[in-house]
Every structure is written in C-alpha cells, then in structure tokens.
Length: 239
Image (cartoon, rainbow, N blue to C red; front, side, top):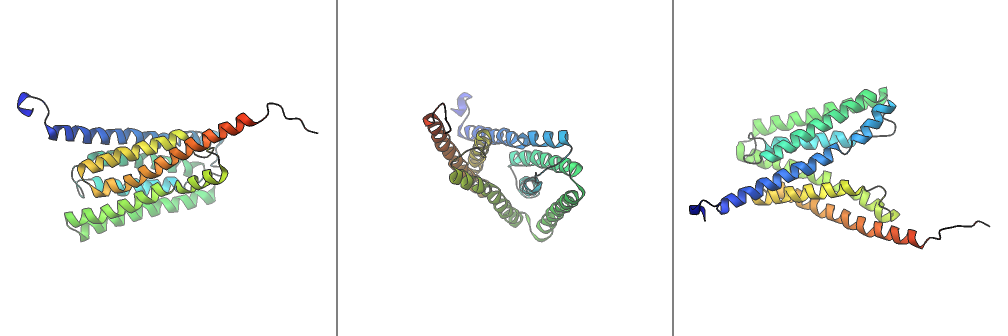
C-alpha cells in the first residue's frame, strides 16, 4: 500500500497516536476552564468565601511534574503531554494568583507558603533528576513520580463517589466534568499505549476506570432520582 502512495501501518499508528494526544489536550482544556465560574464569583464578590485553594495548588504541582517528565531533558516523543501540562500549569497558577489576591490575610499567607513550597519541591525534583541521574534512569525516576502524582489526582474523586453513594444523589458530581475527565483519561491511555509508555498509560488507565465508575453512578442515581420524583404526589396536603 505504501508503494501506491497510501499511508502504511506506521503512518496509521502515528495518526492514531497524535489523534489521541490532541483529543486528550482538548478534553483537558475543558477541565482547566471548569473552575472559571468559581473565580468569577470570587472576583465579583471580592472574597474567596469558603473556597479552598488546595486543589489548584496540588494540580499545579502535578502539572509541573508531568510537564518535566515530557520535556526532552527526561523523555523523547511525548510532546503532547508537555503541551497539556504546560497549559494546565498556567491555568492553575492563574487561579492561585486570583485566590491570593482576594483572600484575607491569613488565607493569603497560607496559600503563598504552599505555592512557594510547590516551586521548592519542583525545583528539588529538577535538581535531583539532573544532578544524580543519566537520561534513562532520570526518565524512570521522574516517570514514577508522575505516576504517583497522577494516581493521587485521579483518586481524589473517590470522596465524591462515596458521597454520591451515601446520599443517593448526583448533585455534587457534575456530569460534564466527569465526562471530560473520563474522555481525557481514555485519550491519554490510548496515547500512552500507542507509544508503549508505561508512565502514561498506567495512571490514565486507572483514571479511565474511575471515570467510567463516576459515569455509571451518575446514570444510575440520576435515573433513580427521576423515578422517585415521578412517584411523588403533585400536591401535598398538610394536616
């Protein structure tokens, strides 16, 4: 087929690989912009209220570690992992900066210390990986750090899953957020599998499983909630 000017097997493989990576970037972008309504509210009210900056601080560290793994200093040929995490780090840093700007003095100090801690930890990872390891063991070292970071991030929805089961309500599990995370994980699982990169497909495989569980729970409890509402009387009289 290649001799007739048609794409050969390697071309199809590359096309599928880049397609999966680009899809993962798109779905990740949806996740990155999902907190915008929260921060519009913070800016509008001039206060962080009861919101926490911890998820954005941790996401920033996760993006920085995964970005470092994907750069040529550590790995070759995973540029779409570098792009998504560079964009993600920029978003998380912007969210954290807004939080610091509108927080009270006590919260501002706490978040600023955490932010400084993130950059210190990331700087230490970069220094250790460059100073103590050659390229191949460096990839392994940073790769396992990125796997641990991603698994911890993907495991964070377990508390929401537990809440859904306990309350039998999907009120606190937005459908489109769960769908976007599932699709992003599936895309990067395929990207990592096509590249035969253990450090990409393993954590994203776990993320895919957890995402599918969330979607199944959403389908079950939203349908159950609709049936329960349908059984309620239209008029309730009080005696």
